[in-house]
Length: 220
Ligand SMILES: [Zn+2]
Image (cartoon, rainbow, N blue to C red; front, side, top):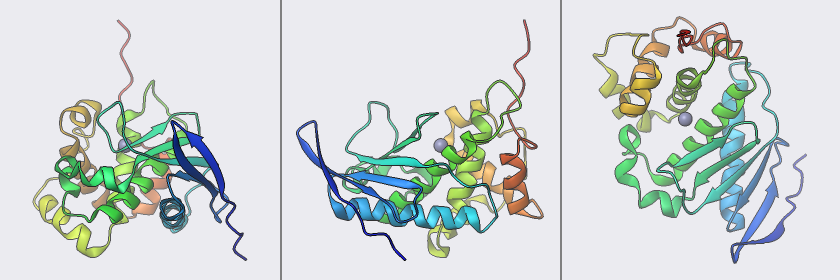
């Protein structure tokens, strides 16, 4: 039975917002209006279904807030250890279409949903053990491959075309490529995952800390 939405009204920075506990009992959506909060809930339902389709571990409760801007130049942000995700609202996202990179062809509503999945993937990875000092490349590998894998056929096709002739390389899945060329990183991650015989098993091993791409930091 679907739980009735409880809508609370808050005032933050002189803008009204709604807080909606989603029926999935995992996500609490915060947005400027009920329609956008409902979109967060449906996007989070799809993300949880995608996790469950591979029998990935359960995600701890997390708050997702649609915001109108970031201090940093990004479209989504997972606050490590705070059970909190911020995603740029669709209207503001549309104005940043030039920065979508390999996702530039995707209509903004579906791109918003895929950012929700990407950031929820970071939240899920945060529950996992990191066997080295920092797992920044591994968490992005997990988030980008989840995001690309969940795209519809029509949204996926242009990305598949870009990845067509790329060789499988694990050595380029690192923090340097991530920061210098995030689109290349995302494609390399996808090509690497696609070459695995069982992508669900690959994700489960990533989340178990058995597969990681970050290197131990050498002692001076
Ligand atoms: Zn990310």
